[in-house]
Image (cartoon, rainbow, N blue to C red; front, side, top):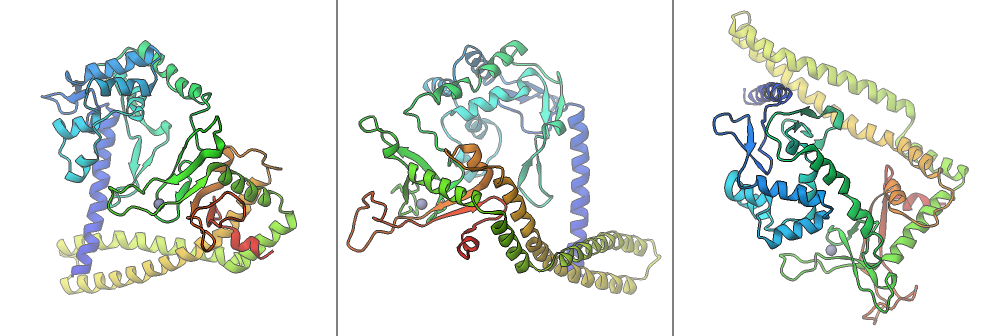
Length: 425
Ligand SMILES: [Zn+2]
């Protein structure tokens, strides 16, 4: 009976979570607050669904909005809050409100940063509106949350006391981001186009933009490097570093070589991928089978609780019940195993579609002169930079092209690494 118990648990779990979700949805639509109160507010003592200003933090929120409305940048606001020793939101929750695990509490910073300030400035909760359902969980059992489109957010106006007026809120919002545009004009501020894309091949840590300006030269001393090297961390990385301009030109060259592929060459690549994955008709057969399997599993999900209900009401004898349940249980296992197998097959069959999509995108370009963030992010998912390999006897890398080798892997959107396919040409 043990395996079946497990299945029942899952049925109840799913059902229960649906009920909880429905309740939350109704509460949200009525504008009742069901999440942790945002910084600046607390739950009303008598009505836990009602937000009221928190006398300790509401003035801080107002100060942030007024400063922003007066044209202060988020960074400047954060600095001034830090100077005055004001506790940032997460730390405040750790200290005064919620119960955190030790690990969670340790993550709370003692300092404000501009993202915390920005998040507050963007939140319409301070206008007195309730905005919920901005993210949702992927499934009952997963902790992962995904963003929900703005159109599906639950916004209810005037559900609680506003901390700022609409005028101040709008003025602050209009000023938001102006600072960002301005600071790009400063030449000494390095803005890497590789953030969130370039990683250390050794430790997987993001590569950070760093370097100095020496004798007015900026590009020459601009590096991306792994900063997971600090001595005070438990397993420091031995580090990797690449000159920013070198990585830009390397990626630009690689993209240009893909752009310059002729239609015949692209056809050849796609055909090779298709041969690898089997015929397209197999793909549709898999898809059909997959749907059948899912349908049957859904039916079984419904049958089992019904059998139990029948048994409880005396319409089904005990030994018949356990036989039937055991059979269904066995069938479920077989179906699920097949579903997993098919899953990996269909994954393969999507590959040629992905290649077609990628090349369709890349054919819109004729040549990339200067690589910008947009183009990079359109095509490149991830870049892994390994450490330099120096010739025998050398301790330092000079900057001659042949002075060293450095392994760099470019993973393109949809298709991943393409080196193996292109090398066959
Ligand atoms: Zn590293």
